[in-house]
Amino acid sequence: MANRIEEPSFDVIKSYDDFEVRRYVDTVQARVQTSSRGGGAASGGFRRVAGYIFGGNAQQTSIAMTAPVSMWEEDGSSWLAFTMPSAYSLESLPPPNDEGVRLVPHAGATVAVMRFSGRNTPGKGDRVEQKLRAAMEREGYQPVGPGVLALYDNPWTTLPFLRRNELHIEIETS
Image (tube, rainbow, N blue to C red; front, side, top):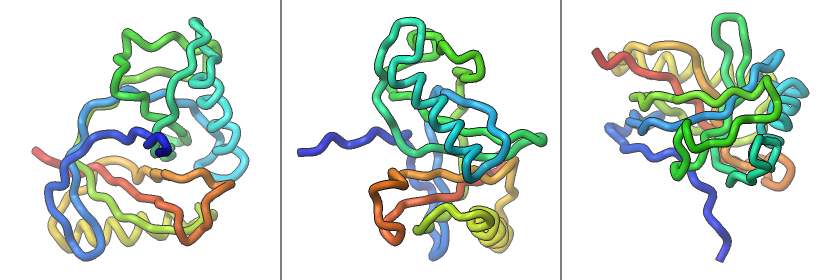
């Protein structure tokens, strides 16, 4: 039996025809700033964070790969992140050798999620984000922050129509 790749835990709060609302737990992420959310810049960011989990850290420890790989743009910067396995805390993770890889706590949040398949082509994430924001508005949800692209599958081995991709947008819960 193949090993299952760990994903962050969540509860489904409500499901709609085109999206669902989830509540995620607190996690720790390894993040790197990239020059853009797609293409070669994302690939370079992926290699840097992958280097960390494959032993590019102070203890030369291999850390299990998780899913999804998350990408977003915020305050003029683009980011790529891996969620660390739940067995680790911020304090128990070895420091990265690459100074550009940052370990940060990621607070659990309530998010709207729209699932889609296919390749992550330029503009596709933006189109899905527009659809999700319209669906959120239709149902009375107030978005907070940027859309986060969540990619679950290896782009080199998975057929495009089978790929699991999601767009996440945090919801105001005050």
